[in-house]
Length: 113
Length: 114
Image (tube, rainbow over all chains, first blue to last red):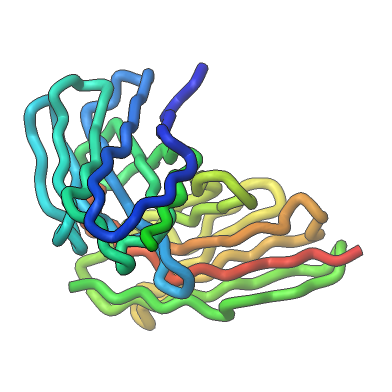
């Protein structure tokens, strides 16, 4: 009964390096999301997917790319990391196309030096 | 787009007292208002939500009230316990949109002291 699993949980990068965050869900949800959480700014949507093979931009998409090759996985990539991307990243999934419960992973803390 | 403001940013109450967190929103099209609780080191978890056709909803010690005219909604926690200590986020979304339209408040850190 894992729910939403994110890997890695912690990562330190140097400016300019690339990395990929992996999100996996075992609830057969169609919809998946990537958020970033910064102090005093709440949760902001980066990218989302409404089904396998689809992706769309959220509120703060610049500097990130995503892929949804399999229904259960949603990958978030940083091609050239910048200090401004230091944040805690949360993946979430949901059943409903309209507003409904989001199921979040436990987060991935990324530091870019 | 939607703008959600949340107050206070921090709240300290004694065990057994009540806690109230308030949010205002700007988009009159919003009609779904969830509240999420985030414990230390965990992801947010939905604790209660309300839709615009309802003015109040209760679930044991927690309740949410909604005033669509004034565009504000509040979370009420009664008989607070140490396990209520967490960060709470309000959010607003148009019901007919996808969850990608969900706008979160900036969070309230609630501390329940013994």
